[in-house]
Image (tube, rainbow over all chains, first blue to last red; front, side):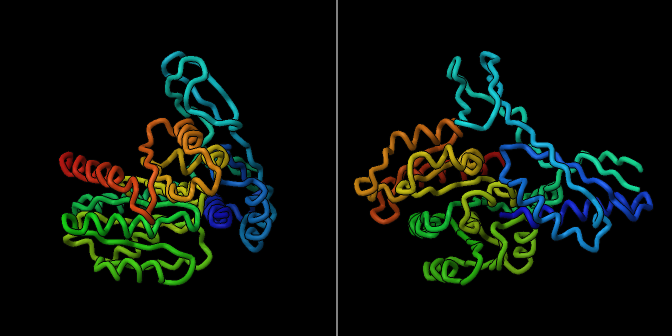
Length: 113
Length: 221
């Protein structure tokens, strides 16, 4: 539900980067979004389509790499992936699992003209 | 065509402001709780119960976040505690910048405890650090035992989860045991407190936990 403010932030960051190298046209904005993040990709895409108008990203595509959640047990080393039936308790030994990936929310790279 | 690799966190700006807020709280010696829940779970009721029991020993202040209305801040002021209302309009969560702005007009001088009551929302507030010492979550038990699995993020981020409205459990057909197990699965370290803000049941355990947390932070300063 806060995707609009996140999109605004993404466009600001991308415009800042483009201006720094004297570009006035962004072609592609590439994000990494972890699945254990309160961010809906469709809402990002919708927000981007609306908010990019009149910015340096007006002609840009938004690409989102969804990063799967991965938990690793620090007792026995067992790993599990995917957010379905999330549990931080290790199915193997009952130990505490640590989050390795899935909380990303970053501007990965831009392509500019 | 040219590629610029940035690999920058989109919420880094919020994180930076949250660190500034935290430094400000430390400097003033104030312990800060970010209180979160879905709408109607009982954040303000819990806050009232907490204030009534703590106000003799701790000087408390409250920042209230809401989309509209100042009724929550009015309820808190009625207890003799300074309260400031942030009305976010359409924004579904508080962020570090809103708190930073509020601190320009809300004095922390002399306070021991600041509670920031976030906007009622089960997802977004968990994404935005405000500079708090602790995130605390209130969940209404009658919403169902499976919710920690469906909305794991806030449960995962909270240091304590209060399971409110246990007086209604007999009417709702919810298993408290299943609910507690689900909270533990998404957050094995969380303090779990079944409470009823209406009857006062369970509030003592929560109070002891909160006081221990405040005092531990004081000792480490």
